[in-house]
Amino acid sequence: MCGFLAEFDLTKGFSEEGSPKISPDAESQILRRGPDFLHRIKESKFNVSFAHLGITDVSHGVQPFYTSNGFLAFGNGEIYNSLEVLSRLNLPEYVLSDIGTHDIKIAAELLSKDPEANWEQLDGMFSILLYSPDGEIFLGRDRAGEKPAFYFVSDKRLIFGSSVEAVAMQVGMPLALDQKQFNNWLAFGGCDVGTTLFSEIREVRPGSVIKFSKKAFSEFRYWHWPVRGTEYNIPKNYQSEILKIVESCRVKDFDGCLFWSGGVDSTAIRQSLSLSGFTPDSIHVSFDEKTYNEDLPEINQNLGKSREMIILFEDWLNELAIKEAINLMDQPISDAACLPLLAACIEAKENSFRVVYTGDGADEILRGYQAIRYEKYLILLIRLLRLVPKLALRGSFDILSRKSDRKYLSKLSVFLRLMAAALVDKSYSQQILVSPNFFIATTFPEVLDSNEVTGPTNLEEYFQAFILPQIYLQKTDRMASGIGLEARSPWLSKLSIETSMRFGEKFLSKAGKPLSMILSDDDRLRKKSKHGLGVPLKRVLTILQRPTWTIPELSSKKLDQIWSRALRGSPAAQNAAWSLYILNEKIQSWRAIGIMKQ
Image (tube, rainbow, N blue to C red):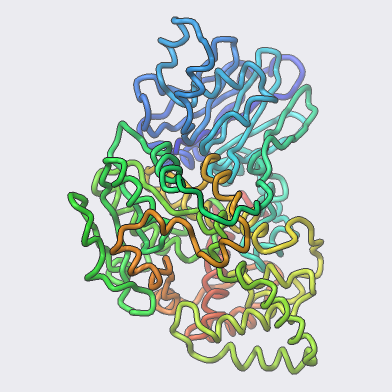
């Protein structure tokens, strides 16, 4: 979970003032990702700062470094199959002694042999940069988009970083808000893949590599999500396959800590680690409101030697904690589960853990969301609602959204999502069904007018290609890295994705998650009551003061109406108010530090 910031000089010949200079303010933005030590390397054409979090083979882990054939290289994340890759490289002894078993160095040796062809061989979560002796630059990112990789390019400068804010501060001038991505964020909670809220800063797409060569720019995909298979029966060796998946992601040098939010995804990781001889400690975030909880007295009855740390969310929650979570977002993240996740991260850090395991990705690869399972019925209901005159539909939505609803996921909230989807253009129906900001999309329908819909054609693809990298993984990465932890998601390894995507839609819809096969008997009995990290947003919002709104093109009057309605208990308005609050906070912060135009 290291951090990096680099600038390359694209001018012909050497720059008059020597190598590009790294801004101290920009550099400070990457330090929380790598609290162990900061290493710098500079030459006439580039300057790199690398903040290190030592996990595997720390003695060989200094970055940036040079490969045996002269490539400058550095990267963050972990390569799960690095030892397997090393065994195939046939490197001379002097190179082996230099790289040890450090995974990023092993990956760089492989990639430097053919920087455009070997990315597919890596299994893990990473963003890796290579700079060839003849001046070509390659920046690649993992399949699912777990590790961030941003860049800015102009006629003279090329800047890379693991943080949007670090790159923006290194640019050194106010940047423009990308209106299309601003609209996307308001409506759907995230930007298009490969973009940011700043017009001038881009992000490498998951499963992709960008190449800069003599001022030419190109991007190529080395991986695409597999097509959903048709396999109907779970193979007899499925349990051993799952154990292999989890074990391949386990760090042997450090004890791990499991985020157990109560979901089957994370519980299966815990059980797999236990069956492989490693009993992990776990963290559970509990809530005062029973709607958001599972039955705590039954938790972890059969965990053996493991330790269960329980945090009461409402006891932890305060305005400073909320502000800290927002500060750790280099872009605003609409998922309110950032808050309990941060509480768990802080507890993990205070107990000297470095590696945490999460259940991210299992729902996306195993059709775990109800919206995906019932998509065709939901779309049918939306079409029926469109038969209602729009004025009457909008009035009904306005009335129903005022009703108090304390449940995390209720029939009212589902119906409001259907109504919201019926109120917007047909192209947006599926996105609104899962968008945390669907209330904004109906309150400010003009934010959708300038968008052109492209990309996924069904909800499963939408979750995999947009929700997962742009919201869920950002949440996990930013909260964990902000506290100096590495978060691992075994269900998003190459092995896991390829194994799980072979199961057919009919089988998964009928059987539920096959992960339940490896749960203990006690876990299996409680499985139906688990639902993950719902957040009592009304409790969160009552702690905060009503904001002074500075969101472009949205009137303070409308924003105040949403805020007031949220405090009365509408779940739709609560999601909208939270999203608007963090967006407002980030915009104010960006203007204060001079990276966004007024």
